[in-house]
Amino acid sequence: MKGLLPDLDLVRKDFPILERTFDGGETPLVYLDSANTSQKPQVVIDTMVDHLERHNANIARAMHHLGAEATEAFEGARDTVARFLGAPERDEVIFTKNASEGLNLVANTVPLGAGDVVVTTEMEHHSNIVPWQLATERTGAELKWFGLTDDGQLDLSNIDELITPATKVVALTWVSNMLGTVNPVAEIARKAHEVGALVVVDAAQAAPVLPIDLASMTDEERPDFLVFTGHKVVGPTGIGVLWGRRAALEALPPFLGGGEMIATVTMAKSTYAPIPHKFEAGTPPIAEAVGLGAALEYLMHVGMENIHAHEEAITAYALERLATVPGVSVLGPADASKRGGAISFELDGVHPHDVAQVLDSKGVAIRAGHHCAKPAHQRFGVQASNRMSSYLYTTPAEIDALVEGLEYVRSFFKLDQ
Amino acid sequence: MTAANLEAMYQEIILDHYKNPHGKGLRDPFEAEVHHVNPTCGDEITLRVHVEDGKIEDISYDALGCSISQASASVLNDLVVGKTVDEAMVVHEEFLRLMQGKGQVEPDEDILEDGIAFAGVAKFPARIKCALLSWMAWKDATAQADDRALTEER
Ligand SMILES: Cc1ncc(COP(=O)(O)O)c(C=O)c1O
Image 1 (spheres, rainbow over the protein chains, first blue to last red):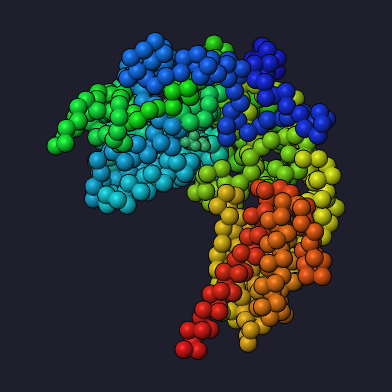
Image 2: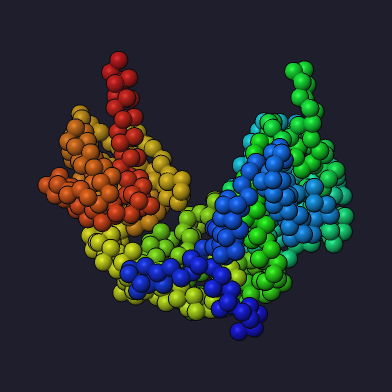
């Protein structure tokens, strides 16, 4: 199959959990839930253990060997993130605890008021909806939405009504976690920047699969803020990233107050540290940041271009195979080159919970439900769906196992009788 | 989960109730209507109760969800309609005891009838909420109907 990682077998060996079996060794794990969270390579696990075993100390304030080592490891991870994103400056990388926190940080600090407009889209994860609902309710600003076309793309036909001089923020996902759609971020950013709006990109699903190079984007097309989450890029949970343009970050007030984020504190007033520390109050998730650094090094070593090609090949194969199962209908774009690695689908006559439960008995792990994208489900008149999602370790044989599993679901629920 | 567990969960009785739910649809009259959702999976139910002189005359509902939540609403309808509220609460308690028993509870078949088929579901923490959705909605609606009756008496 063209596009697959040439060393797929070796890549799989890097992920110890893929050896898991159930039912006393009879049923191998087929993990197709990577859009939910990805599995971790040994090097990430080892790096975190090594940090805790040998280098653990608090950062930035411990005047001893270990303090220096921990600080170097933590700040080294920041350098790695900057390289991974092609960030113009490493100090523009803020560590958060996940993508949600990054989005909340921006939504809580961007100045908004009555008459202002925030624009988001109907395909967002709840993490890029609820913070903006809270922010607009709090400030009296108005929240507007890009709708979706029937094939799961953003409907840009009314872009000139949505993006006007009143628009202060355009917040959108790069890749949809439900529909898989890859959105035209550059085009929308250009439009938003013409009216002086800030562009906030949720890259939680894009960072795992798309090569990102912020520095090589033109100024008009480069977002102002971008977030992603560590656990979806083969890193640990508890760590995420907010990248922002220096000027945009400097213009925001601090979000959380505490240690590490100050320049000086008196009883009358405090002044704040420069970015990135201004936005990193308190002791950060140090081992997790170090683990994220190792994860991104791993992905860059395999090569994001190669991972992207692999995802596209697996997705194309999955779309082709799913089409052979009677009663399966896929949501979102039909063309693999326009998608990320998540494919949501329905199986006529069986509720997604039941599909997932029966697949699980065969070792096949998928997600069932609304995938934290209720408005997108509503748009397509679907209450819940099944979602398979692949990653760099997914094989065509695992897609075959899914398809076999779906045939078993059909027979289990006697759909042909 | 093994194939045996799967069969234990999806008892024939459950699949029958799922395919032919008893008492489905929203009907008049009713004293209270509630809407409950399972936030993790989005399963939803709108449920009405009609209570007269302490007796449950009807439970009508409209529900979206998996086989377990649908079958459970159907079994609820079978078990509770025609009973007094007090009798129905006993059934509710027994169903709750079964579902929260981590698969260790021996259900009372005299009380639960078809409801004992849900014993297999109790082993799957993720699905217990599915089985309880309609029962919790019913309890809520009944309490509301009760409140209303009290207020009207006064
Ligand atoms: C598109 C998208 N945005 C945001 C998130 C939130 O990520 P986290 O839960 O790690 O904050 C997710 C993951 O669930 C996602 O898929």
